[in-house]
Length: 124
Image (cartoon, rainbow, N blue to C red; front, side, top):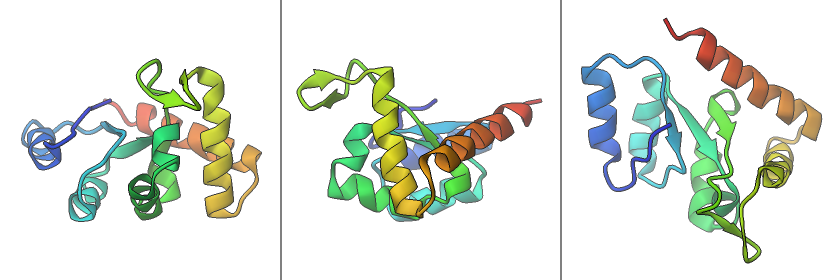
């Protein structure tokens, strides 16, 4: 899981140069163009409550295909409603994503599980 803030292009270039096959871009906030380059390279993105609470975060989310999405809390750094983010805050993210993709919360949970499983089983 990579923190690439303000260095998205450079992080992507290093991943490609060193032929890293699996990576998660945590709390991505870069450009949509680089996001599409990251997707083309087969990487994933993790979504937290801060992302679903901001216009820029929602824009990023709208560009990520459902099969490349994972969830995260980023607690205790991320604050949600004045408190440090906790594992149970994942339910809030799942509800947002389920509503966005117009599927049920259990379907979204299953999709996240499938995405994670696909990512880790492709590690060689």
